[in-house]
Image (cartoon, rainbow, N blue to C red; front, side, top):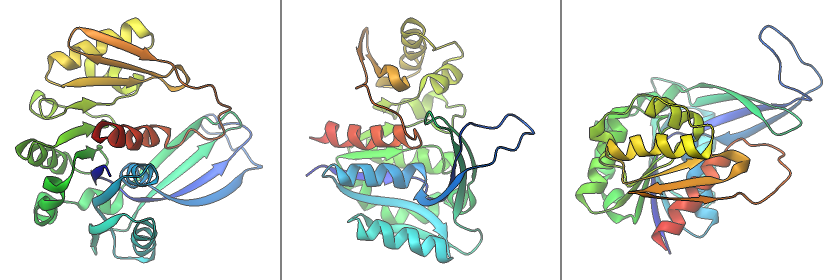
Length: 264
C-alpha cells in the first residue's frame, strides 16, 4: 500500500454553479449553491486515499465547527489526522468558487488557519514524513513549512512532489528539494518567466525549472493532458476525453494519483 504524507491546506468550499462566469462588476443570477470540504492539501489526501494509499495529513484548521467537520470527514475517509492541528488565532480556511456550464471556474480563497501553520507546530510530526514513501506539498501553507517538509523528506530519502499553487516565486534552494514539480501551464510560465501555452513553450519553461534544480517537471495542460520533462527528455501524455462538469480540484486529483503511482 502506498504511504503518502500530505502537508497542506484544508478549507470549506462554497461553490455556486452558474450558467456563465461574471465579468468584473457584473452579477450573474440563477446559480446553485454547494458547500463542500476542500483545500489543495485535503483534496490531494482524499484522492490518494481513494486510490488505495495509506495517507497522513499535516495542516491547520480553525478551532471551530468547520475545522472539526473537516477533521472528522478526513478521519472517516481513513486518513491519519493526528497532524491536522487546530488554531484559536484564525478561522478555518474558506474558498469561494464559481463554476460555469463548461466546468470552468473562478476561485477566491481566505486562507485563515492555513497561514498560521508554523515549523514549530509541524516539527513534532516529522515521523510521518520519515514513514512515507511520498511527501506531497502545495503553496497554500507558509513557504517556511513547505521548505522544512521538503528538507525533512530529502533527509530521510523520501520522494517529494510540489504542486506550486497558488504560484509564488521559488528559489533554487527549494526547487533542489523537489523530485517532481507539477505546475499547470500558467504556473510554469510564472515560475520560468516565459510563456508555456504550447507544448514547445511548456517544454522550454520546464527546461528552465529543471536548470534551477527541480528533479522532473510535469506541466499539466488541462484538456491537453500533461507534459513530463526530465533531463533532456520530454513526453506528452494526452488526456482522456471527458465532458467537463467542474474542473475544481482536477489538479489535486492528478497529484493524488501521481503520489500513489510513484510509490507503487
